[in-house]
Length: 216
Image (cartoon, rainbow, N blue to C red; front, side, top):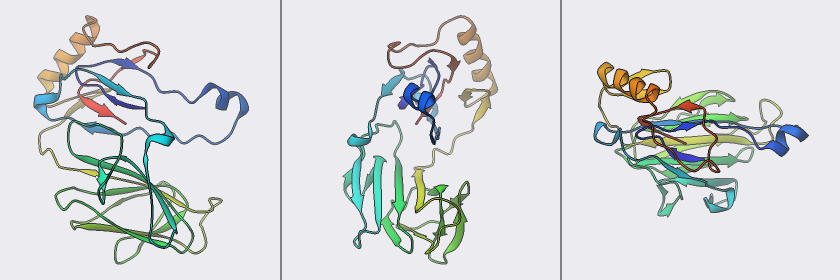
């Protein structure tokens, strides 16, 4: 699911019903991307992005698969539409493989390890499941999978994300993300008065308010 909360919508994210009934591993990762002040109250928007829609790339040696969800990697764009320039990539790296991908110099860059173990950066700092790496400035980012995985995962799965810094103040309370405390108060009053936006019920089941940001 790829959603712009903007002026506020009510929503909840749940795993597929068949997975709940049959059991199994389900990874849930919710990323809130800040919106600039001028777009805080933009119209809500929703995209249902399926696995077959993302751009699929491989490393030169075939040791890694990269799924470009949003932004652009080496001229290959992902389907996610955002209000601010960002990049979001899910990479699966085979044991012992190393990847170096181009990255915009004006973007910050993070790497969250979904599973497995490996290293990040030219100095090969170790990372493992549940850890977040912050990359330094540069025109590329480098990461690698350990030869032997730390844990049951057969490979390193890492979520790479970054974007152009907005450099504006952030005021947050619960699910509300605005720029000032006064705007938070107004957002909460709008919620209580039923003034938040709406999208088709078939796309999202209403539950919790999330105005002022993108949710990926």
